Image (tube, rainbow, N blue to C red; front, side, top):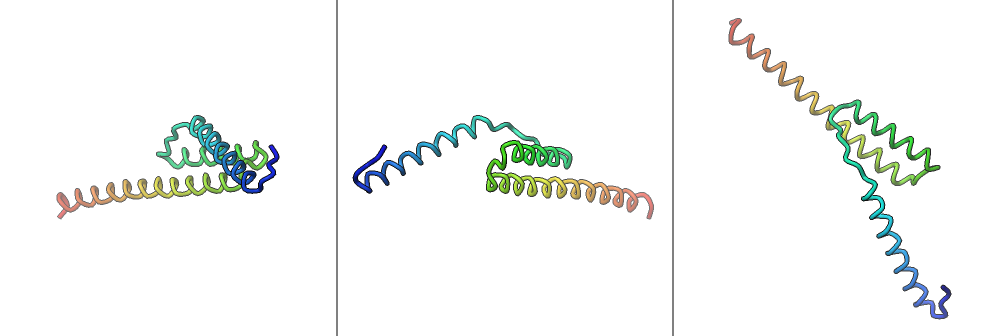
Length: 103
């Protein structure tokens, strides 16, 4: 829709862009699915799916792909940290058992 007044054109463009973003955000929220990232394998699977989505969309959006990969990287660190804590607790438990009965 052409406007004679440049200010009217800018106002129209701002409003159009705002509405478009609102619709895209709502579509994104409705397509979201819950993800359980409790194991390294689950994180790897999600990473593979994210990469496949990017390739299928013809480069979905470099920024969205970058954000998704960063989130998955953080999730992987959290899973690894939890695994290390569990293993350390097991070692401490076993050392405690040896200390009580052995000496």
